[in-house]
Each structure stands twice: as structure tokens, then as C-alpha cells.
Length: 248
Image 1 (tube, rainbow, N blue to C red):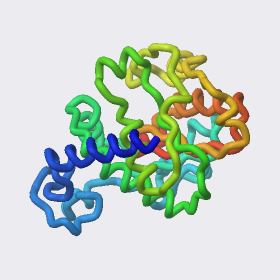
Image 2 (cartoon, helix red, strand yellow):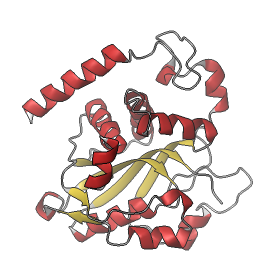
Image 3 (tube, rainbow, N blue to C red):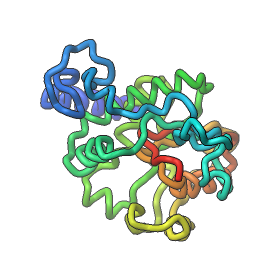
């Protein structure tokens, strides 16, 4: 474990050398001062829709002010196996581009600032100490193709910022699922059915888990992960994502 931490610190230091933090806005890339929170300039902060006010009481999706139910449409229609999920921002074109740069542009330094926002949300919601932070895994074939799992990198930073341990090896994806973004709600559920497996249930039994992913849409991915964690005996499952789609 100590060797792993040392290696991670070395990699993190090299990333900071290649992509120094807080010198440009992560959205518009204009120069910024070090003091700018989350490395986002004042102009871009006004464009981002932060999930700060009215949100779904189950999944954390932002709700319209005049929307009366406490749950979003998805949460009223679907049983979720996690206790509660939180998110930081609304998934729009600006955020879509940001996540694309992280996942496919390999700009891994962006994960640090996303994790900063997610850790701030965790503290804001006063979540109790979690036994494990678990990133939503990629299938080995997809991870080999992409070279890294963005949720795992975000989780590493959240782990460092909270002091909670991370386990990225116990929950694995055994099904090479189709990309979700073009699937309907029902197709997503089918796509994620039996997609995950717990290798060591004894490490999960009676434990509080924080699941981490980059984006929440219908919740089918987090739900499938949560179902396996509950089957392994998890005590409580919370989730945090960087972005979430709007309530439809």
C-alpha cells in the first residue's frame, strides 16, 4: 500500500509538472490567478449550473424551481439500491466538453479539480466516514483501449482529500457493456444487468461505501453496482458524481 501511494504521488507530481494546476481556467483556458476556486474563472462560473439548490432527494439531480415532487421522474419510476447520490454540476455542453477532454483527450489533471468539487459536496452534505471509496469500474478491454479509468483517478484524489481509503480492485465489470449515451432508459437497465461482480465480499460486509462516477444520467450504472454491493452485505451505499443530466 505504501509503495502504491509513493508511486501515485510520483505520477501526480509529474502530472502537475506537465499540467500545472490553477494557471488557466479548466473551461475556457484563459489565464487565472491561483486563488480561483476549482480553477474556474469568474466568467465561466456564471455559465455553470451548480447543483446547489433544489435537487432530487434520492439521486441529487437538479430540479426546476416550480417542480413540486421531491423526487425526479427517474427516481419515482425506478427503485434505486443506493441510499443517496449527490452531484456537483448539470451536464450541459460546457461540462460535456470538459469530461471529453478528461476521458478521451487524456487531460488527467482535470480529475483533480473535479475531485475538489466532489469533496466539497461531501463535506457540505456532512457524510460520515466511509469504509471504502469505490470507483465505478471499466471493463478491462475498455480500460486497455482508453489507458485509464477516469472514475478511478477522481476517486484517488477524493481519497487523498478526505482521508478515506479507496478500493479499486474489488468491484469489477465482467460484461463489456455498450456505450450508454445512445440507449433508452429501458435499454440502459438491460445493458447493465449482471454487469458487475464483487471479488471479495468479506471486505464489503457491514461496510459503508462511497461509489464514485463521472456522470449520472438515469442511474442504471450506479444501481447495478449498488445491487452487487448490497448482495455482498454492504451496510450503506452513497454515491457522488461530478455531473448529472437534467430531470426529464
